[in-house]
Image (tube, rainbow, N blue to C red):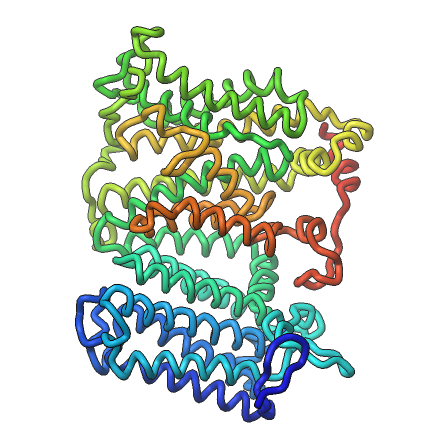
Length: 594
């Protein structure tokens, strides 16, 4: 019989017994991955081998191992306690639920694809029952958040208390150890990302998403994400260097260009999203036609890069083509922004949406019949040649450090440099007086204007800078895709980047942050690319995901303190209290510059 505290059933086990039962259930789940789950290899991943986990079994194994680790942390083991500053129950529950979700998804997928539960071997039944027993035992763990006179509810066991992070200070680590922790974190992150992008079939990718999603929630509720964030803020330069080094290592982990091409397009998408973040996240200007600036840069580069189908017949070196694309996009940003940025809110959004459509239609009409022959109309500008910088041909495979790197690997490394430049520009702009003036305008333009800030000039500057960054990415995209066509730059379409997906990436990741749009862009590009077998339902699932995000995480996956204060009450914040400069402070410090 179970007892109930609040709304969720809890097993009537003493805390020590519940912890032992959780660890035992996780161990049983882990052991089940070494048994055959089905008798036929028709299911992807070949789950018929005894003694050697494969495919989705590996994900269950990892989930069970992490569940046992966090359950063991409840015994007060010194090293493990550093990983759980906010408690151990909530992360153990999240991981138990993630392991259950991955395991049962696999069992259901086997039954559906192969035609019934009769296709399960004893190992599959053992995994299903052991993962369920683990979750039920974890429900009996004592809640991390409960006052002396408060009975914890089942929901509190899942949410935990990140406020405990502030009450339980971290053990002091020497600087070299903190740097090693940062490096190890990025190394693990690179491995997890590489595993996800290298998944060979849709079922494995869905299981990967389930486990990674719950594992991230577990680390967040354990307080480890907050602790790592504090370390990265303390060693910011080391963090940026580690992130760049981890990203550089990615193409050297690939055996072919199949998945490197996805990573290259993710970087293009992320770079453009960062440029939009200047406009939307910092200055607060809703731009629904931003992808047009990407198209301006791509068309400008295609016209001057020596394409046999270029109507102007010139060939600039790459550095000149980059400057041309960025400069033309900047000019268009100023020309569009000057007459429209005196509008606000919905009116500005409608005007920018119109500009995006005007750009696409104009590129279609510059075909020599309905207008001057400049862009070849709907056929676009094909045959954009591969880059050749200082004798390095980006179109052929090269051996770097003994590892063969293909065409997309070459462009990935080039795009990584472009992304680093954009990150540097965004970081410098956001921390400058102009950046603080943008934030002041975003928070209250009337108050900012009353304090002496020239709002129109600064908004025009944000618009121009964002356009130039998009044009910079467009110059590389033209060479990566070989062809530039008007249909690539729609407001919404099946393939990103488009204006809707760019805006969703900024909001999903976290407006005004540095890493938020990069994370959002990676998710929004990677998930459709890996789930093409669900093409008929992608937009449906995308809509559901956005609804859930707006309900439970409106500030984005990686939000700054200001956004958390905007969307949550102070008592509901899941980060320790810290000093937040008000918008008026940004107004005051930016006044002299403006």
